[in-house]
Amino acid sequence: MRFAARLERLPVYPLAEIPQIKRRLLQEGVDVIDVGAGDADFAPPDVAVEALARAARDPAMSRYGFQLGYPAFREAAAAYMERRFGQRFDPFAELHPVIGSKEGIAHLAMAVLERGTMAVVPDPAYAVYVGGTVLADADVHPYPLRADHDFLLELEDVPADVLARTRVVYLNYPNNPTAAVAPLDYLARTVECCRRHGILLIYDNPYCEITFDGYVAPSIFEVPGARDVAVEFHSLSKSFCMTGWRLGWAVGRREYIAAMARVKNYIDTGAFLAVQAAGAAVLAEAERLAPPYVTQFRERRDAILPALRAQGFSPATPRATMYVWVPLPDGVTSLEFQRRALEGAGVVTLPSRAFGQQDDYFRIALTTSVPRLLEATERLGKVLAAV
Image (cartoon, rainbow, N blue to C red; front, side):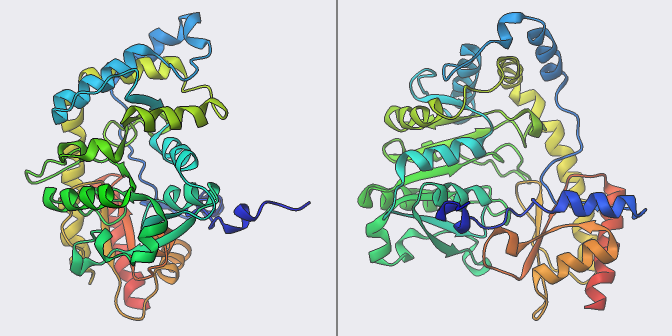
């Protein structure tokens, strides 16, 4: 059997092997602390569970949703965009439910990219940016994110011949995995560059509610002119601890939304309607439901940072997300450190190499309790001392 060339171009998915290794270690009696996946241990909001239970008892909610989905979810997402960012969108033409933002990003790439075109992808980055581009038969131009440039992707620094072929750039601030945030003046010059070069800006914004120390994350649509060139993705996964529910939305100019929906028509029939009903209930109370989660993430951040520094690491203080991005000393690669941490210390982390070509950081997710985070940090310190 011959497989498509695009399959061979797909990198190994960073989380693909970890569940099996973790299962083996647990069977061997190892006390495994998992700070790898961004999947917090908090319960989802009660209102989500209650709304899901009610909706699941309604036989109509078990029917196909198709791409229309549950109208109340579209309306709730549009209302949230207006309350949170001051941006008004038509819920039935400029907004579309997605089965988690990951799915929507990949399908939008398929609608826009083709062979001979290119996407500018931050490195490191969430794997779907590369995956969606490759599955669309387009080429990836990695842009290295650097600490001395605040982990910002500067389109003006991309070579002119690359920009001439570029149809898509992916931005994600607050950023996974670096936890960087983007100032509005940076977003404004990026939007202007996209307008000049006819580039679609895919703005992935699932961490906009998980911010600390007075920082408030914007929507790309708060930048003048962004509606001409951008589609923004939101998700209930991170801010509302609903990762497995697989629900989010895309918002932007109606032509872009329609193109993504056209692809989705041939691939899926929409998220379970009862889950969309739960999402509508959550978004109606987003301002009440998100802050308690953020408080707990901040407590975890504030506990682990001094512990990491005491063990010889030097992480910056993140102003957003549920991640700490930890640099490694010269000569220590992220893949080797991850292997030693997992096999030798029972700690699941994600190496920077899992997010691209850089090999000198690792990511800790603030997804378990403070005592477990501190225990993980102590174990990681012993690994560092031994390398």
